[in-house]
Image: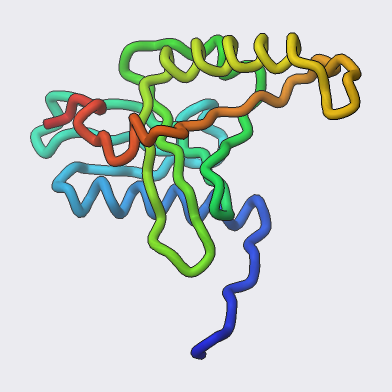
Length: 154
């Protein structure tokens, strides 16, 4: 209906939507993409080229809203294997999703450095920030937007 806003998805719904959107985009680009079962730690999608000579594991993180900011847990700092990637999906209201493809070792370095900087910066009222396990990833200059070639499947 014209003029009606889509309801905001729950976190689980957004996550599932992000996984299937990434799998669909990979398929559209000619790759083989398989969404894993929920019990596969750290890998939401297994993707390969058509002849299965190259493959990667993908962790999908989805945000809703206009600002592309994704929340990660501290363990993101430890995931640095060569063939593992994050695909960050942004689902802005009433707009096309965007995809940011980032190797895990870059994410690990980024979240560590940005969290360290956040801890060193005083809060709004000058108080020190308290350490926590929720870290953030941002791509403010869209350096990784639509960088599907980074997967190395071509």
